[in-house]
Amino acid sequence: MIITAISVIFILAGLIFFIGGAVGLIRFPDFYTRTHAAGKGDTLSSLLVILGFAIYQLHDFESLSHDWLTLLVILKMLGISVFILITSPTSTHALMDAGWEDGTEPKIHRDRPNHLNDDCEKF
Amino acid sequence: MLSKVFATIAVAITGSILLYGVSDFPAFGDPHSPANAGVPGSESVSLYFIEESYKDTKVPNIVTSVLADYRGYDTMFETVVIFAAGMAIFAILRVVGNKEETAAKAAEEDSFTNGDHNRIIVGTTVRIVVPVIQLFALYVVAHGHHSPGGGFQGGVILGASFIIIALAENLNAALRRLSELNYVRLAAIGIFIYAAFGIMAQVLGSNFLDYGALQPIFMTDGPEMARSHSMLGVEIGVAFTVTAIMFAIYANLASRGQLVKGL
Image (tube, rainbow over all chains, first blue to last red; front, side, top):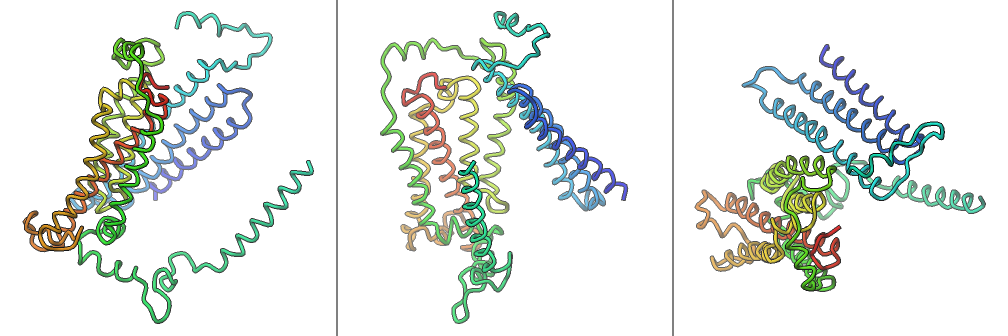
């Protein structure tokens, strides 16, 4: 019972972040903010949903010798989440970097100082 | 505006026709549908596979046993088609570069993390992730008997790992690990392995690709396990070819056939 509750909380939290990422992808003004929304939202929400599934699997778990197959499923899910944790932010970073090198202009409020070109030379 | 109205009408009509067609289909997973049970008077062949494939081959995954054994001849020439596609790409795109470019290629730096500081993030991640991907690809190839997977899928994953190396640094970094000579060899060896299993069966006095005849070579208890082991063997051959051709297509397309620098 408690296990179900915890896993449902995890999955619902993940879905909320998914919605946030989707809304951000549509409503944010320029390339960088949209990628930021999609990258951050998707990473965290995928992790939460997969962790929720892994916790739900504990239902069938009785003892280590009896149920090592269940444990294997949980370990695989944890492996997937580690993989997403490493690769998803990197691909977002690579996408942003490619956009920057391609000369995509970020949208900046006209009253704010524009520091973007200051940094360019160093890198 | 008007075009949108017409497009909406066209989509609605097409969609309703398709939905009407769906209503004629048998229910999902229906054991009495023609595909599963056949029509009255003639049984479907899938009944045979569902009931007998484990007894015949000792492979729990019916898809693998059908793909690599019952219709092994078909799969072998699917692999040949992939090989031919790779050779066609090679014949159309590949140009031999001039000396200047070869010199530039030799002068190219070696490290993932060299140069542009943004490379550090991507390069480090790729260095961590690529061994995991390659190990997983081997697992997919070897585990095709028990779970979804097999030579084609594992080969694609393995080829993609080399493409990731080429994307993270440049094409030369990937070509140092799998050179042009080696990937062409690998593609040919894959088909050779597959055909060798067929010819060995012929040499031992059976039909082409009849793996049960390979029992004396594998020294198994019965022809079933010989079929199981041979399936693994031909899957490995398929994986070789698919890996090599995946990478060959990427390398030739990304560098316009010059195999220098890449994207």
